[in-house]
Image (cartoon, rainbow, N blue to C red; front, side, top):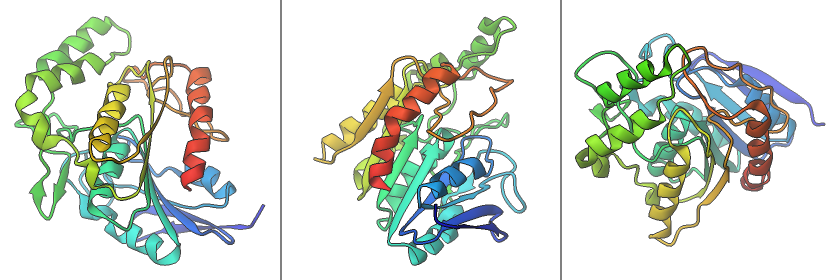
Length: 277
């Protein structure tokens, strides 16, 4: 295997792994934890792909929660990867898939977007603050968003009855309750010039990621654009790609699936992901 140089990104708090001879650079975005995805970057680097991951909230000078995050936060690392490598890819999971799809609409230099457990709309920020505000800003303005249905969210917690709550129905309820907000909040994925690969589990207990993946595919199909969707009927929100350690289960909410089926979905998806890398 080619040698890999690992660099700490001080400007944006993150990590960059660069295998010798790499021609593709990937920006790897975590979900709503905002963490730096070092393990996933190392896995990608083992396949000869340069991979960077940054903390996009909760770091110095950044929002403390997943709300009102400037989409310009990612501009620096994207420009750096684009300057270094022939091909530029963004790979995001969950909340990071939301960001990846949005970035794909804004940056024509992005050659491919991979969304794992994606959404098809921009959501309100994850915060107890009311009134609700967007997860994202662009040029200082809030990106249109779908608010959460607070009543449905509270009901999901009650129905858990001591078990970890599933919020899938609460997200579906929000899409219905705020249907008038959905058109403006729908991510204009037809503007993504590059390839799009989406990976979703039918047993996702956090949000309806298969429904979202199919909505993205339909919208792009209407514009004669291909979208690859890889699913598994039993996999959950946590998708484990080959060679990755499994994330520890959340102690706050249900993800659905199991490590075995989550790994099976990752195995199904890997050839499609590898092909665009």
